[in-house]
Length: 115
Length: 113
Image 1 (cartoon, each protein chain N blue to C red):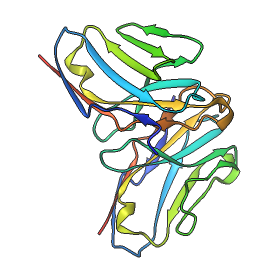
Image 2 (cartoon, chains in turn cyan, blue; image 1 turned 60 degrees about the vertical axis):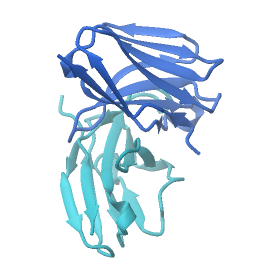
Image 3 (cartoon, chains in turn cyan, green; image 1 turned 90 degrees about the vertical axis):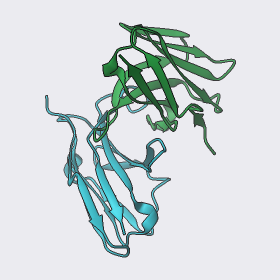
Image 4 (cartoon, rainbow over the protein chains, first blue to last red; image 1 turned 60 degrees about the horizontal axis):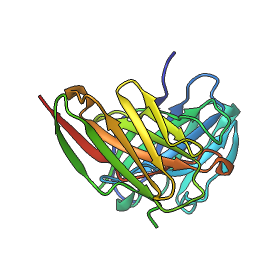
């Protein structure tokens, strides 16, 4: 079974530029999560999808971040415009469990550097 | 507001000995706890979990203990192996919040041969 795929793996941009990340979850997983992991910290949830509906986006900075999950499968996370403090690893995870319990499977992440 | 805390940023243990990683939480509403392991340049991988109705869960060399009164959980690895060297994150969730995981800051474990 293929794992969660993410691309690109690394991205370097200037501040005020825009960037997009892509995630392909494990086949059949209805729940998809985007996390931000700043160096030295644990991952922090940005947004959660159940199929193609948003379950939780309370910690997504909506003035600059947006995310969508078309057809309940792949997802993209966009930042526009980027700030220096957005430098982090962006992790995508998926789960096939009832979204209350159960493990989440993580992709390798996209390391974003904003200069 | 750091609801899940791992106060030890690093831990060094000799191969074959026990590794004990600790985690404290502040929200008594958490009802499910997980440990993840992370190697460099990879995403976290699930290790073991425990529901709040239990106080212990074992899986091979890994055991998680939950002390609800102290709001504390720990991960024991016995015996420790060099391949266990990684960053370990504890995470907590509430069933009625859709599986949202709140992570600690992580503890970097180094197992020396």
